[in-house]
Image 1 (cartoon, rainbow over the protein chains, first blue to last red):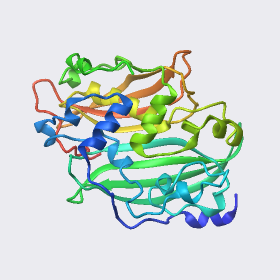
Image 2: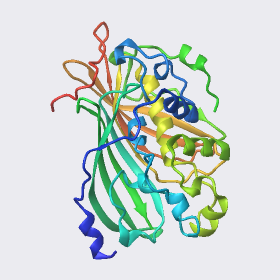
Image 3: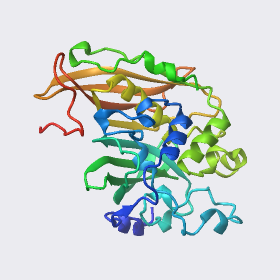
Image 4: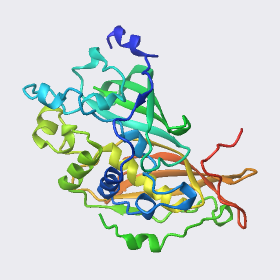
Length: 168
Length: 168
């Protein structure tokens, strides 16, 4: 592994606001897409303060904003473009020395404190917690560990996520 | 995906800590067969355009994969749904972790499972530790993990919401 990769450890983002609030239509498409037709996502529950989004939803809210550049257009002629844009790195800068490697989702640890409510704005702050290389049965692989915190409008923690991305 | 709103008629709104024993197995949650259309619908819902989920030529020829893969984000969603449904409205899914150890290919049927490994009473609620995973029709495990759920005591109030972890 290129030693310059280690310089990315500890890099963190500013607190970023999701481009859209928790929207009823986006929640519907999300829940229908994995087949979780739970009434709390549409009709709500008094215990949760009204309609809410699925537990993991806040971690999927950080998408390309309206005026952001379009990586699909920009890399339309690049045969190595795997379709992933900046959302794959939770707002963190892409690790340039690993740009030529493919990417697989190695695993996640998630900690939930509440549901996000419809209409709510959610913020994200992420950092590269660790990057290391390991010999596996399928050869050398690089593990990129990212920690992210998703907070509600009052600054309270909704979800904490630790992701492992495998580059090979 | 074998899911209908009637599923929620069968889910108890409340599961008490005393109803759970070490070794208790959760009723499995089965999804599938997962077609390319399911994967495309999920990718669109989360606006993640990683080609290995819908571009078979890219997956096989560029990324040297055996075929289109079921999204890791979709697999973790199925396990989270299993836990959320089982904890009931008055319990809470505090923590869950997954390792994406095995690939699941398009066309597979996946069954989320869970088994209680320990339980601990705390002042305001009980904590239940589980092992969880996602098994295909051939019995191959792809997404082993662990989870911690908070459940109310029999005759007691719901687990406080938003959830406040116990001080250890």
